[in-house]
Amino acid sequence: MENILCLKCLICGKQYRHDEVDYICPQHGDEGILDVQYDYDFIDRQISKDALLNSSDLSIWRYKPLLPVYPEAAVPPLAVGWTPLYHTPRLAKDLGLNALWIKDDGRQPTASFKDRASAIAVVKAREKGAKIITTASTGNAAAALSGLCASMQQANVIFVPETAPQAKIAQLLVFGSRVFLVKGTYDDAFELCLKATRTYGWYNRNSGFNPYMTEGKKTAAYEICEQMDWQAPDCIFVSVGDGCIIGGLHKGLKDLQALGWIDKMPKLMGVQAAGSNYLYAAWKNKEDILTKTPINAQTVADSISAGLPRDRIKALAAVNESGGAFISVEDKDILRAIPELARSTGVFAEPAGAAAYAGLVKAVDQQLVSGDETIVILNTGNGLKDIAGAMKAVEQVGTKPFRVAPDIKVLQQVVDGWSAT
Ligand SMILES: *Cc1c(COP(=O)(O)O)cnc(C)c1O
Ligand SMILES: [Zn+2]
Image (spheres, rainbow, N blue to C red):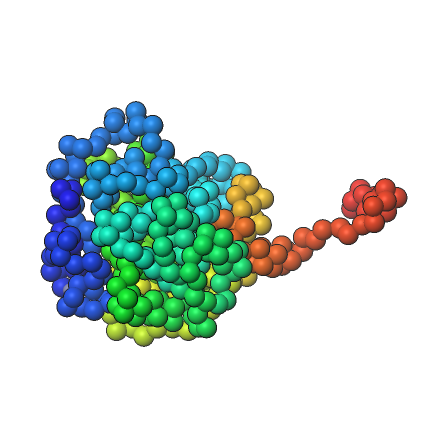
């Protein structure tokens, strides 16, 4: 692959050819996450801002020369990426901000950000001639893999915690995956999936293990910058579970800097749920993330529930190297964020998506951002993914439907009540 120089271990720095290792640095076990290193001089000859201006490909594949796939590789037919970036002046005003944008990855084919990574996974699996792809997931990565595999006629095996939201499990079954509902946490599902990978030789898509998932997720950073006419924002807020998304954003921004397409690195703000804030705690207390033990994760935002964030090396580097911060938000603030965001923007997020907005509210409160900064929040998942969470959220803010007999007189009593208040 001419655009790739090597895969580099983020612990020891050892470099491997891309066809020499599949996932991790053999000397560092599952912790030895690899980073794909590119030849930017070569890439610079394959792609330019001007060429993108004329590109009719409105998907992540418009950036193919920057992705870890062969130029001639067949890509899935589903339209992954190029999600809308909405200007949200009303919400900005409420928060005392000048310029606020929301990128809605709830609009992906399987309704979460994870499609960006799973799209790369199915291409890599085909490249390796894999008969079966597998993943462990809190739900969205699995749904994404499941849908993309369906589009490519690719067999796959899924491991999710049995507590995953029903809508996500429904997606897996509808797309025809073989589904294991693991009696345990996401972390348990992850370990079981790794064992199955080693036992059966399946191709593994796990975040924070398969180095190419970062490379799919980085496309959101490209899109944000291109949609803002290559004026990078000052700050990007995103929720963090394993840390693969925030690491991916960082990677994408570093790519754009290396190409000279943007001239500053936005601060990356990683938002964690208070009940699953391993990285927030490690960052705040300067703990060693290679020795820090897993926590017992519990949060209403299932997509960011991770006792041991698998991509913690890249996530911590993203925040530290960009001058950003980790922010920890309570479940009740995550739930409140769902209707607040929906009512002021029209974007309906699942709890983990709304968490990014909850983090922004807290950051404004704590003066971590200033009013004149240009800020982007990333909605990572569609609200329809977790109806139980959404119903809890509206109950918390006291929004109820009216149950009425089909009778205009009964209706009249309710409507009269409105004008009285
Ligand atoms: C996976 C996911 C996240 C977190 O991504 P990580 O890479 O695990 O940090 C956030 N929101 C949603 C909706 C997700 O599915
Ligand atoms: Zn190593």
